[in-house]
Amino acid sequence: MNAKIVLLPGDGIGPEVIREAEAVLRHIATKFGHTFTFSSHMIGGCAIDATGSALPDETLAACREADAVLLGAVGGPKWDDPKAKTRPEAGLLKIRKELGLYANLRPITTFDCLLDSSPLKRNIIEGTDILFFRELTGGLYFGKSGLEQNADGSETAYSTMTYSTHEIERIVRMAAQAAMKRRKKLTMVDKANVLEASRLWRRVSERVVKTEFPELAYDVVLVDSMAMHLISRPATFDVVVTENMFGDILTDEGSMLPGSLGLLPSASLGEPGPGLYEPIHGSAPDIAGKGLANPLATILAAAMLLRHSLNLSEEAAAIEAAVTSVLNSGHRTKDIAQKGQTSISTTEMGQLVLKAL
Ligand code: NAD
Image (cartoon, rainbow, N blue to C red):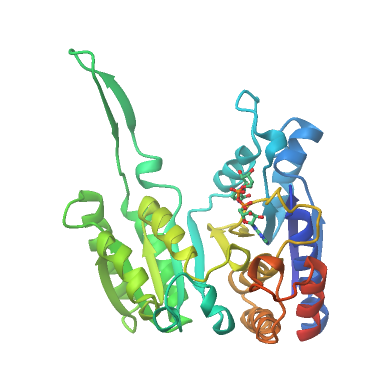
């Protein structure tokens, strides 16, 4: 297959981890007989320095023409001035909006050899492999909001959770399709005992699943219960779909389970158009340029890119297996090394994944 992949290294450790992920993608292309064309563009703080914009037009145009986009991270103390005209994060928000990315995918997967790094007990976390679908462009964060002055001088503020049938259908369908390729289990999280918007989610979701995906095991869980289940029985979930704010909170709770930020990828998808893939960590300015960054989250984001944007599941699984095998052999970057264990550099970790492939 031929595919155009845009790389957006960004700031801090972004360029270091993207370099390793690019090498892995190039290796996959050779090994499986694909032609991937790469181009690298600026986003975030480095783009502000060079052009005054956190997302230059030229970067956006390249992304629109690509099959998929792989991003490192943006931001750092250099651009933190609250009085600055533009901030690196503006580039991220703009690219998500411009590409119409309405679904955020976050896998919460554990590695057996790292189970003891989790804040949860081994017997609870063991076997956890969840794929979250968080709705990204609707709900409370985008609904009508306002602040009103009351006659007694106090204030009243409101934010509204708004969803349309179409917005719910498209993400439930996407989550259900992913569940069909996994363990065929879908959980929808809402607050239908209180919120009207959740009651629409419940009706629409059930209709989509029952009519289009009758083979799926489907259940609904209230968001407050889900917050508990996620730490008491995480291994019982497969694919989970939910609205924007519930997903924001639950995915952050979930990201703590595997025990390291440096191992977790994410994807933002829309249709039609390219998906955006990135590690969930930031630009880690404290370790930038020192060769200490763990590249595995970005390498796993590259695997997600192959699976979700290019439909190359076998190639994605090969990368995931290579990462597991490197970790099982005991190799660790500093962030995941146990006390007294020697750690390896960003490049060494990348090279080991290539070797395992
Ligand atoms: P961070 O994720 O960058 O770092 C948190 C801690 O985790 C740091 O100690 C860092 O050294 C460590 N860490 C993160 N990624 C690592 C990796 N791959 N390997 C080893 N250690 C790793 O979060 P922060 O410190 O809150 O933010 C730093 C900057 O990143 C800020 O400017 C913030 O705005 C930005 N940020 C960007 C994104 C993004 O681009 N999507 C996300 C979060 C934060």
